[in-house]
Image (cartoon, rainbow, N blue to C red; front, side, top):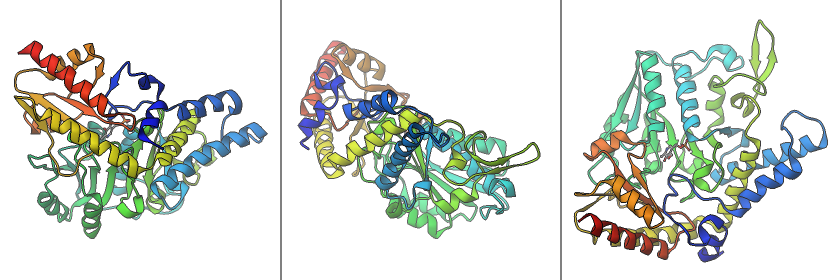
Length: 419
Ligand SMILES: Cc1ncc(COP(=O)(O)O)c(C=O)c1O
């Protein structure tokens, strides 16, 4: 499929009434995703995993197919390694809570259906996160640390060019008390792509569990969980052209079996009595209650849509636009690009010495250009670069050179106004 034709699949932007450069916040939705969801609601709607009637059986099949599509997309060994959540944020909260419970030996024999968790550890539990994390991969771990005196957060520094300080990371990984490394694949501000395969190898050589935040990578690069060899990975559907309210946690099956459930309720049990409850098998053990069925169907459709285009084409297209944006932005005076890593996806963040990010965003909006301004849910990263906010453009499959040219032209007009 030609990338020009891809744009036609997105009615909200294909008529050129808006220059949408905020896909890192959320992606626009292709017709295929919207159609899959409306078809389900109009023709196939029923609950899943419960009814014996034809409609419910068919709905359950569609729901299961979405899980299988995601399993294949990330090359997980089994579909029970894919757990649906409300999004990456819920996924990271689930991992932080259940993993810390297990590490603290609080998973309980009941929680793991008769096994006592092998994850139990004595003494201090250190968890490493990096300076470039989104708040979603900071706060859930901090909440655990505030509940347990022996859990400590360790920070991996980054270099001035926005790359991870790998020497510092190696030292941190050598610490015998370090149990978990929770890290982003790609920074939502810097665009930096971290060398996850290499990092996983180092972490596992030291017996450290790797949790990967793949939110900003999932729509731009093929992510093979077996090749990356991560223990956990999270992402949200809305960052890969799917609906909001749904995301996935990948986790190795043996680890999921060692963790206690996160939410309790219907669907995640085997037996319930007032004396004792036993939990069911994966993936249902982690999916209490009626799931987001329609959103899951849309998630599956989004994965199919992106797979059809293919990452080779997507990567080449987006890198071309990234290079153009970078080159054009560098021509401005008094500009600083935040994040100059050698390996980036289509994100460019910038500040001007003399104009506030908020003013840039507001004025660009007058020209129908949509970019994000603010702290980008990464306040520690803003602090690292001595700023409180920045402007960020981010690229999706539907963007073209004209979008970047329009943005640059609107930025020129904006700057003239302020200087
Ligand atoms: C790197 C990163 N991690 C986590 C999240 C949280 O994703 P969500 O808000 O979909 O849960 C985001 C969202 O912007 C992100 O960019």
